[in-house]
Amino acid sequence: MTLTIVGSQLGDEGKGALVDRWGGDADVVVRYQGGDNAGHTVVEGGVEYKLSLVPSGAVRGTTGILGNGCVVNPKTLFTEIDDLRERGLDPDVRVARRAHVIMPYHRVLDGIEEEVKADDDAGDEVGTTGRGIGPTYEDKAGRRGIRIADLLAPDVLREKLEYAVPQKRALVEDVYGLEIEGGDDRAEAFDVDALHEEFAAIGERLADEGMTVNCSDYLHRRREAGDEILFEGAQGTHIDIDHGNYPFVTSSNPTAGAASVGSGLGVTAVGDGEVVGIVKAYLSRVGEGPLPTELDGDADEEALADDIREKGGEFGTVTGRPRRIGWLDLPMLRHAARVSGFTGVAVNHVDVLAGLDELKVCTGYELDGEEIDTVPTTTERWERCEPVFAELDTWAEFDSAAVAEAGYDALPEAAREYLEFVADEIDTPIYAVGVGPDREETVELTNPFDE
Ligand code: IMP
Image 1 (cartoon, helix red, strand yellow):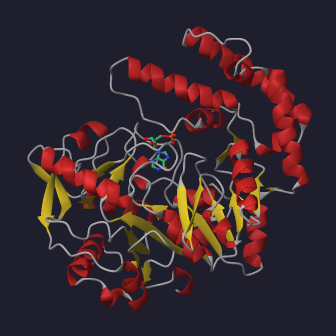
Image 2: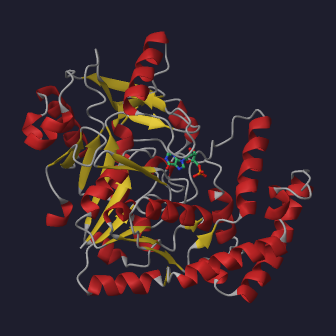
């Protein structure tokens, strides 16, 4: 069967912990979109692994695939693999030959575009991770991208660089009016010969290590052989380029439909399996864009946000930026459950909410005198939404390890009421509850691979 793990909110819901946990029952873990903009922290026996590109299952020794829907920075990939090897692991990672490559000029252009947007005072900068994600997907759609397969064929690679690089140069110099200085990193990022040398060598290493695959064919065969496949979504529903809060989105589709498109395994295979939405028990957002339930109204709310941020470790894995904090927003979850067709949810960080003086959940919004129960389609309308809150009982601090061992009924009663309220509102059963960062600190009600 297949299991697809999807972020229900704005990324950083703690997907890595569940992928890692259930990945133990999978034979293959596949990333189907995004690149090294993702940040997954996996804690195994007190040891922390921070991964951006390598699928989280690698910590468990499961085969990890970067599907054709991903954009791959090979330098990040090799750094992560080498680091895991140095720490005594032997990750088995394959890359789709159809996946697109993040080139150095994509990262430069990502930075320039954000700077230009920041300078025009229109408030339109996205707050990207600066990893070159958007510019790489632009080139993919513009049919001038460089794919992993091209790195294996030096002549093809040169031809493609000779077509793309002058366009990028012109963009920097003629459109943005900036200079490409000689002798520094930026100059190398736009130098066909330097790029060719570096990326042909990367292709050699990919070939030597037998890392590239025809993803569709590979997964089809593994499935035919009876292997279990886990799709690891990165980012979250509300930063999906089609279903999220455009333009404050990433340039790929984190939602479940992309598991099929981004891997080449048919929709029937993905739809035949389980789709589990990962929910953080409150909200966090890194980057710009609306957040109706944000705790930023007054000094008390800001102090509460600070507490939650500290306790939940809410600082970007990739960028280190402090994350904005808000109450749980059910309209966002309803939208996520519908778009991806959740069969279950896992609610994380329930321990972070312990010991609060008040606890709110947004059940709907008021917009232009009307009450609505899902997220409006435009940023402008979403920004004007006033949250309608339900107040729920709070719970005291509890011993996460003991609760994880004893099971769901050992959770404080108010925490269970909170979880059941959420499950009812989005009409989706709870499969797991995260009560701490360690893999063991998860209360499992249902293992989707047993369904
Ligand atoms: P990009 O993906 O770097 O282009 O950034 C676009 C938007 O998505 C920005 O608001 C980022 O902060 C956000 N974003 C990208 N990746 C992640 C992630 O893994 N977690 C949370 N937010 C992300």
